[in-house]
Length: 224
Length: 390
Ligand SMILES: Nc1ncnc2c1ncn2[C@@H]1O[C@H](COP(=O)(O)OP(=O)(O)O)[C@@H](O)[C@H]1O
Ligand SMILES: [Mg+2]
Image 1 (tube, each protein chain N blue to C red):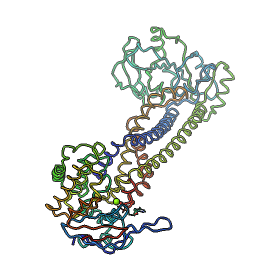
Image 2 (tube, helix red, strand yellow):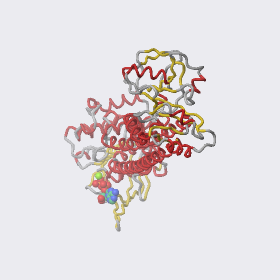
Image 3 (tube, each protein chain N blue to C red):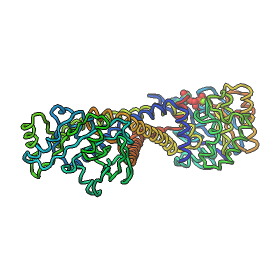
């Protein structure tokens, strides 16, 4: 078991009333599994990913990754876990605006203190897979939305993560970019055994996953 | 650490306006502080030197020269008057006066001499107590020999050309802080008269610029000055202590306001840094959130921001010190003339130490100003930070 989520709940307090963004969620993800989550906007998908990725603290419940309760970890250990085991793709731009494509790619490796030569090679190889190796020295603002997303998906795989948390990585993308991003996710899932938790609007894309879940008002439901 | 710096540099490079803004604020504050410190320190050294080295208690000038007399004592203003040498003999008869040394200052036209900005100083070897001690120590002054001020790198035995004559350097004075002395070439009055006659200067034989008096131990300088002005209404006696006190008062006023100004500017700069940083933290929340998601620790974010501020402070501080130095060297002549006091630029080592001090202070204050925003940035919840930028 790679991810084990137990009774996860996140409550946002807005003045007098409470928003249950995520409500009593149980979820297990195996190594190498490809899981898709759909759901209306505001149903709690992004919040769920942030809780699993250790970016936001649950109000109630536990998240275990590789058997470790991530919210028992200190900042150094939790940061290291994010760095080594999880690759993120956010709903909007995930790139650092002041860094070039190459620098963005190398960032996770530098934070891990990895060998620079190896990191360069890995970055090049991943960028090739999304057809961005020729834009190594461009800055994010010089790229289209689709190109930025392609770099972001490549960067998510830099440190050979065990889990990819991808929040609508193909939202409002042109068809080519969408196909490139999806191909990358499926390929790495197959070749490197990376588990993927993919949030998407598109039923079509969701159907490419092994397992499909739906979120409704903070609750997570298994589909078929 | 290397990564902090790389990221910080990259960020500074990409946000040029913000970088320039903060660096300028720090530079202006550093420049003001540097200038105030240089002025304070070099003025007080020059005053101390003047008093100690002069060895004269009272300076006598023509009454008409009154307003600029203090400037002459400190050597900042050119001498534009003459008085007769014979007063030296008269003044020695006044009670309390131990010795009278007439001195003539001549600023020769540039083409006369091989030295730039030279001042020819004539003295009476039989009477002088200001230059003679140095000359004695150097073994005396022979024919066609002169004594050099501290400013010239002239070794004993080398030659200078004055009005077409070659003189040999007999020795060199120590620095006095008085430009007329430090830039001086000292020679007996008789030699000076010969030279100026040849060169067509307006100093005629028997004329000198000032007469310096040394008083006998215990004599009251004010009383002696009164006696001189009573007996010789056409003369003005300037008491060294009083003259210095006047200058010092003016100086304190100037320096006081400079230091207050630099305090105000520092306060503003710190506030500005704090505000710009807090603002940019809000603007950069998403960046911090993404960094955290990629595996940056809180400590890393804090270190990254601090590295950025340190680079800015060093840059701004160095820029400010450099600009301050340049400005000082441009206007020091002007200020010196308008205040009537000299201030030599500090020597390199001294200026270097001051610069390091000012840059360190810039670092310290900017760090203090940014600790809070940096800490807050490091404590943001990553998910909240990422969403805040959407
Ligand atoms: N920081 C927050 N404060 C208050 N409410 C929030 C906050 N973040 C999310 N929410 C609310 O939580 C619910 C789930 O949001 P989200 O996880 O972004 O949904 P989705 O990604 O499915 O569109 C929404 O109702 C949203 O308004
Ligand atoms: Mg969402």
